[in-house]
Image 1 (cartoon, rainbow, N blue to C red):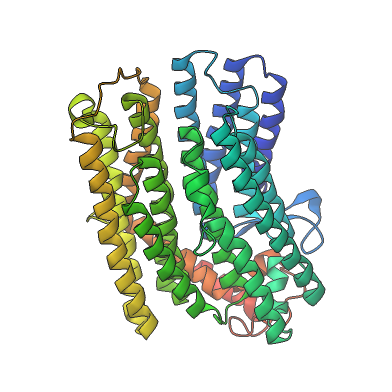
Image 2: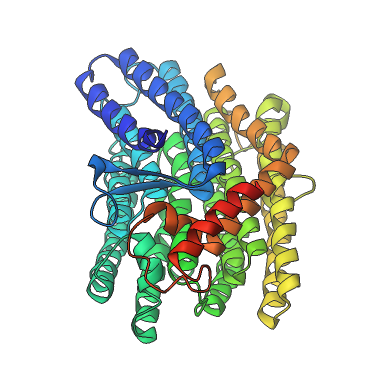
Amino acid sequence: MNWLVAIPVVLPLLGAGITLAFSTYRRVQWLISVTILTISLATSFALVVLVNDGPLVFDVGDWAAPVGITLVADRLSALMLLVSVAVTLAVLIYSLAQGVEDGEEAAPTAVYHPAYLILSAGVSNAFLTGDLFNLFVGFETLLAASFVLITMGGTRARIRSGTVYVVVSMLSSIIFLIAIAMTYAATGTLSFAQLATRLQEIDPGVSLALQAMLLVAFGIKAALFPLHAWLPDSYPTAPAPVTAVFAGLLTKVGVYAIIRTQVLLFPQGRLDDVLAVLAIATMVIGILGAVTQRDIKRMLSFTLVSHIGFMIWGISISTEAGLAATIYYVIHHITVQTALFLVAGLIERHGGSTSLQRLGSIAKTAPVIAALYLIPALGLAGIPPMTGFLGKVGLISASADSGQTIDWWLIGAGLVTSLLTLYAVLRAWNLAFWQDPEEEVEPKRIPFGMYGAAGGLVAMSLAIAAFAGPIYAYAERAATDLERRGPYIVAVLPDGDRGTGISDDVSDPGTADRVADDEEAGE
């Protein structure tokens, strides 16, 4: 069943070519895109189940690692893949419903579906790749597709924001490419599995420099302070569906890359204190920006930046509990943040604006929109028993168990950020939904598909809270796999050179196999 790993990458790329060929047949494009993402979603769910027996490895062209391109699905990547494809499908349905309602002239252009499917393939490739260079390819695939999507419509504001986005992304890519070259020069490989051992055998100063370079590259993509300034100016100008999928997924690809590299490649945790300080600054600076905004999209963009800090917090603790909390928080945030941006699109359609100065009385005129906003907003703020509360409790518990001075600073910053998040979202709730509007605006009709997609994600966030027990337990097992490293290395290089760098996890290749067998027997 290892071939299933390639489907979420290959199928959307194939679909992109087919939809481009049918560029004049919009309904055929819709059918192809929805079908492909539905198949990808079913495949992702199957992978989440199958990886319980150990990581699945697919060697493209039967060229095994480290020579060929390897795709690897473990618990972390499978869970991220499942949530990302579900969110991508929901946003696609939202955009299709909006296009149908607005008519042919306002419908997405012919390249929307190819670009959207390429974006999905890039995200999936980034989650599943087993080597650094293919991760770079995944990021560049995202960049190419996202530039098309963010500038769609050709307005001056969108071109300007798209240009800023591309320039910053290219800077990040250049840094990443330099880090890749330095890594290969130092170790002779780019395979994650081999790097996990060889990086432990090189000069510690060189290893630290490589770790810092990769952290900078991924920090820009994740919008980590002080590398975040591009995001609030780039996202709000894009169409609502594009903003939603960007907010939900693109920064999380950066977070995923930080998790994968910091834990698998650099397990010593030499930059943990740096990550902790960056997490505190990201949380506080981001939320201070959010509370000053008078536009819902910009407010949500700043909360997006702020809550990246919560994910980095868990990574900085360098314990299984911290990683488990981070994984759960990432899943929560993908769902909630995407839902909020889709609801912002509903608000804009109903009220003619996302400015808090112009909106008002939406709770009276559109109570469904009010409910769809309030539920994920409270989840984002961390009100119990929502997903945000559960993730934050996990982070606080992990820091309290660690008990270092920096951990108490992280807890304090997290509590302050949560309170200010609650203030920001309730302030927007009060102004947009209860105050009297400056002028009456004739609302556009909102099709059921737009309500359904946004409501589906809100329901998904509630389901993640309702089934928090098994989901969190899955995240804990994923964190255990990450910390042990042995099962991943053995799955990718069953008979290859593992070096001596996994001595902390498994003392020799034979022991590595026994550890993997013991884990399977235990489950």
